[in-house]
Length: 277
Ligand code: ATR
Image (tube, rainbow, N blue to C red):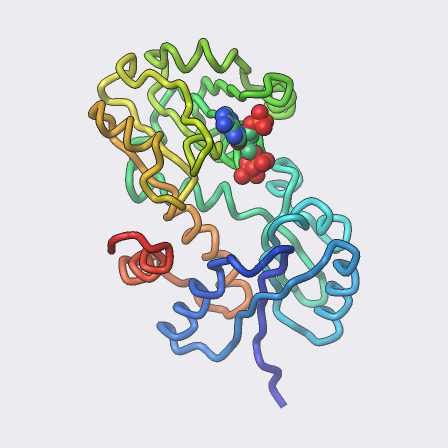
């Protein structure tokens, strides 16, 4: 008998993952047989999960915090992209080989292509933050050939580490945010400005009038960073499309059809986020 195509998102905690909403929307829209479920996997149960996935012939999974690094030691093949970014978020089987890649850089780029297609021709870019997400964004910016990339971070040593890993520049955060005039593209990857966290001391008055400001945070959708950029007339891109697009390659690998990121999907997630649709 034909096995049901099953895929999962694993993490700890996992209750708030929106991936099931996205993949179930596509399963239904494309009338595809299959399932996609959340699974709480504690760090010491990760290798057991991988064994189970092999034994039960599940199609694969998305991987989130805290497993994105550890999972790379448990698969048969890690893509150059995941290796360079230092984290994997998508696993699938190619024959019996368990493969892992990172689709965040793809998701970021596809979202920029949707909402600010001229991002690709930017020559200068400022990336704020030095966490895992920043690594994927740097990778994407390098891929499209943005020549001058500057990284700033509250903790300077982390920005310096990234500048070495990716061969880009690191700068002092306070100074760079005081005068953003050199940058055609300004990208926030930090949680600054969310909830009680104080916003970034960024002076959008100093920005080029044609500059693009992008955030990878999607909850809230309109971050302090984006509101402020918009108030100064900048073109802005929110983070929701990155979440939606990063899911596309996994769905295609597990279920055999390439899904589309469209307005009904965006509206579904916006309503789950409590945002106006
Ligand atoms: P992610 O994987 O989403 O990138 P992360 O690895 O926890 O998450 O990184 C969070 C980023 O947000 C870091 O760059 C962090 O700065 P530090 O390295 O100095 O911790 C940044 N960040 C969080 N709160 C911030 C704040 N209030 N001001 C500026 N940066 C902040």
